[in-house]
Image (tube, rainbow, N blue to C red):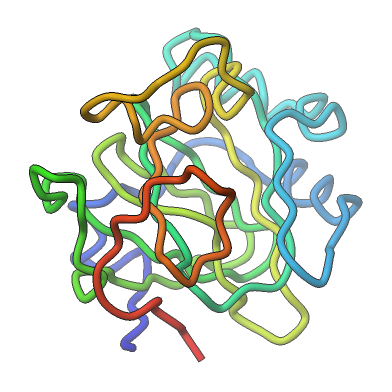
Length: 205
């Protein structure tokens, strides 16, 4: 599939490049996080949150709301699922990576989504983008054979385990705090995940 750049006009409906913050210390700290053969996600990591980027993002980008900085690292070339939050998510490239994104407004009334609507964007090392709350996304993809490292910034407690049952209407999509997920039947997701991605499991290879 065609891979555009996050600086292209086509990305503006999904998010924007974050300006005015020096992400260098966070990019450096990411180099000390694991890089597995598959994909690993940690929502909150001390070595990342101890950088000055944490305070800058919490103050400027999230308007002083409590935040967390974690990582999503590994090797991946498939879509597998799409998720969304009730808040923007900041992705910071610790390496080059590819983001697969879509629009929440294209989800049908019965919570299915056509994967042919997904678009791919190249996120270069050192670049940070805000993905709007209405943007569907999931784990980044590898831009190179040596994998990817991406910092994931979200409001505090996002993606932590749920306290209650969720089983009706849109509620059934909730798989973690502040996380609504639609999976693909080939995505290898946990039992009970809502499988609603229609079409091919998009591959960037």
